[in-house]
Length: 117
Image 1 (spheres, rainbow, N blue to C red):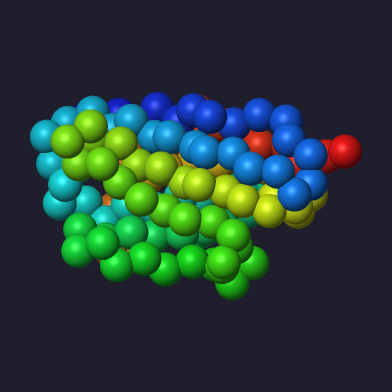
Image 2: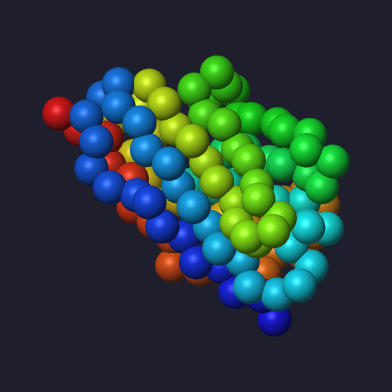
């Protein structure tokens, strides 16, 4: 079964940028509709951005214009470029299949993003 390994998180000041990566094992990555999720302290996990196998993207209204989801099928890697970060973007970020289109894979450990001055 495919495994997910997220990386790239860290501590950044408001207005800063980070690029998250998610390596996906298994041979079917190119066919997956993928997504980034995040879970803020004390809140439920929410969908941040989706990217289907046709390169169509959708974003949570709270990140539109600031975040960009992309993929490299040859590297089996999903990315999330995050610009103009705000304190409310703080949380653990996870990648997985788009839960609106697929059953999710076992969740990885996520990567912590903290936006603070």
